[in-house]
Structures are given as structure tokens and as C-alpha cells.
Image (cartoon, rainbow over all chains, first blue to last red; front, side, top):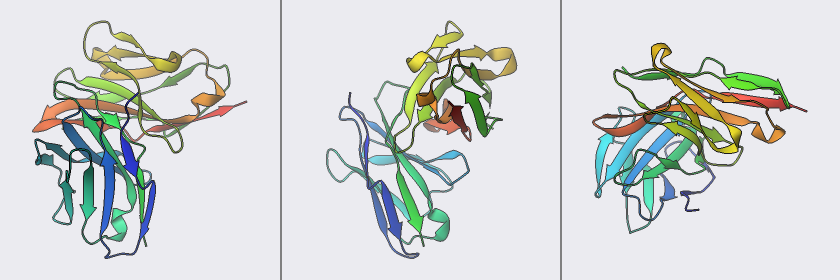
Length: 113
Length: 114
């Protein structure tokens, strides 16, 4: 069964460093998403991406965040200068063009020290 | 504003016992409703969904959920829990505001006693 793949599973970084979280969505999906879950809190929507551009971003998704689909398979989330409060689990999801079901990866746990 | 509430953060049940995980939502129309499960090191796996029609929906792994519009609830049930069901369970609402996206509840962590 096709699945969404996220790498790395755990990323440790120093405050102020740039990180790139990577995702390989399901191949025929056209909508891509990033969500995050701070420990003990809800899974929150960050950004949606369609047709090579951001469809919507939440208020969390400030100028430090960016997303990119650099080739036909990868979908990345970059945090330019990490803060302690960026420590969280980040989930990537994808969805078909006509669907309502999002398929999630296993997540990347980001720890900012 | 849309919201999803899972009142129980932790639930512990004995193996073989029945299970009900609660989910309440706030949304102006009938939403798309989902339950996902996350086992350690795994992604969010879809257990079941409700879009319309029969309000009792069956999912994988023997789970079912019932949509009750009057109570704005979508509770997840299983008649007999297995040790392998120990995981975190998330209720989610899919809706379009701007673009289509999910709102999740805080999750319920299930512990199963042998």
C-alpha cells in the first residue's frame, strides 16, 4: 500500500540553525500538508500546498517557515532559524485532488536545544 | 470557530474489555469526521471515516464509530480490546475554510492491561 514517507524520524538541532524536514507524498496525490504537534498539545495545521504554491498557511507559519516541492517527489519544510518553541513532531500529509482523506507520514520529531 | 474535543487524555482498559473514546466537535455544517491511530514510531493511520449516510461506520481492526448530530459527537468504540490496540487515538474534522484541512483533537492515549 502506498504511504507517505518522512525523513529523518528525529532531528536534533541547535537554536538558530536551519533545518529541512523531508517528505515523499503518495505519488498520484496533488495536495500536500504540514502539521505539527507540540508535546502534549493538539496536532495543528501549518500549511497546505497545491499546484506548486501555498494554498493556505496558518498564523504559526511565519517568515521563518517555507515549503518547497523541489522535484516531482519530495515536499520539504524548512525552518530558517529554529527557536526552542519549534520543538515538536511535524507530520506531512497528502491527498488526491478529489479526495477528503489525508494520508500521513510517521512524523519527524524536531528537538531544538 | 471549528474545534474538536477529546475529553479523555489517558484511558486504561483491561484486555478483552470494551472501549469507548469520546470525541465532540464544533462546526456549522456536517463535517467530514475521522479517527486516526498512532502507534509508537508509526504514522497516523486512518481507522474510519464518516462523510454522510449511515451514522454507524465500521473501520479497520474491529473499530466502529457513531455520528450523533444532536450531540455533535463521533465516539469510537470497540467491543473487545486487544493488547495491540495500545496507541494514541486522534479524532479529526475535515472542513473547507480557505482550503480543505483538518482540525484534530488532543488525542487519547490508550493503555491496555494484560
